[in-house]
Image (cartoon, rainbow, N blue to C red):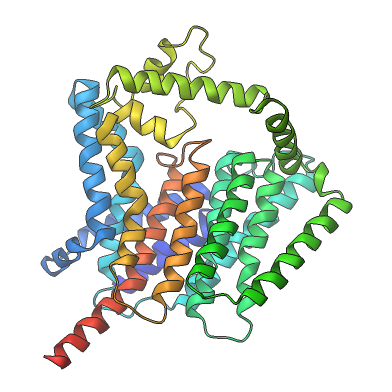
Length: 404
């Protein structure tokens, strides 16, 4: 029962959330809730692991800040947006006394979810004529964010699945790139490039990629980009918007479009709101209004957030909120770094580092935490990291016991 409950949660996040967010979110939260009910005394041992205590400590800090910032217990309402994070502990615990899901199965789930986003993107772009693909299932920005995380998650297959066709797992990021491009989401396009750079650079530094292989791959990438532009890639919304931004940056130093101007106004307001209440912030229900009030001509009154994770945490929860943000973001990385050396540890470190980098970059231009589907996917990644690292810890304990 515990195994299939864990499996259903991962299917909900990896397969369903990218293409059917409402259904995937509900199933994931339901599985996480049932997992909480199945927690046992023995599962308290999992508390010592960074993947569990860091997100939970982050939630506690948010509870304190939201109550203080709002001036009442009603501030706890804002913590509901982070509810998926509560599922990490029970989902990791579910694998303690059962065989963890095979990594190849998890990769298959990731590929299915990523391929599904491509189908939706092509349908929206080709059949409906939409320049912001993904709107049929979600906000195009959130659609692109999850598609990108899903695609790069598939690189897990290069670490755990032993096959001579390892390069096939690169299909994950490539498919995600298609979805992101058709979504017209500039932040995700930039994040795609950053994630590719981070993954290749960290793998090279760890000597997991030969320089010859890196050079050949670079040539193929350049040729593919040139062929894409020759075939009309530059006319697709996402690429066209990024190219216009690059032209603006070269000419004026900043993009000059209206969307960027609105975001910059939000960021300035968020900074002003943080400086006005730096310890606890203004609470989850009043931080946008506090940011808007500090601007001479606020352009974003009524917006649910400030389109930036850092300013959202800072304005709503102050310094404690920024600490909570750091705990959330670094939990998967700390979990892998605390794992004992193994044949898969470095590879897992590359993939996790890439996912965190992408999550951070996308969070610079739009909210990630607090958006239900994206938060569900982040919680699922954390749970998967915990499940994959658990056997490494167990084998290390066995070796130590044998030596003793």
